Image (tube, rainbow, N blue to C red; front, side, top):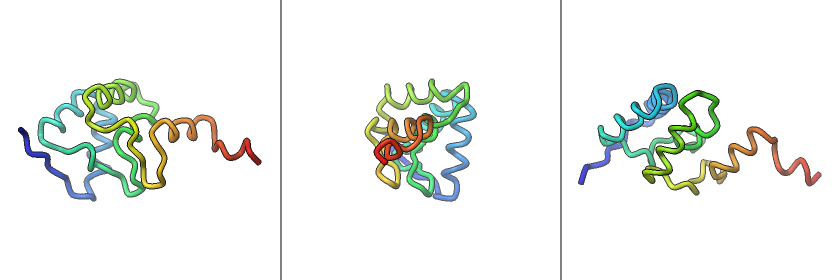
Length: 102
């Protein structure tokens, strides 16, 4: 069993950017290097799954599928404010659901 390693917090954003722009091959490379994607977080608690799901790059959908299919991160993962991935995406594209209640 491979030992998971955490990267220093200041490098989390850089690693996420590399994954999201580089695609599935970079994601797999990071995993093979032992990076624990579950602990790879931005300051606001967003995981690479959140970031990829909310990003409009040609790699985003493939990255999301790879993460979910291989269970690198739980699909029900929450960010720093308690939003799941789907909630983050819907909030981004549809606006706050609370607006419709006002």
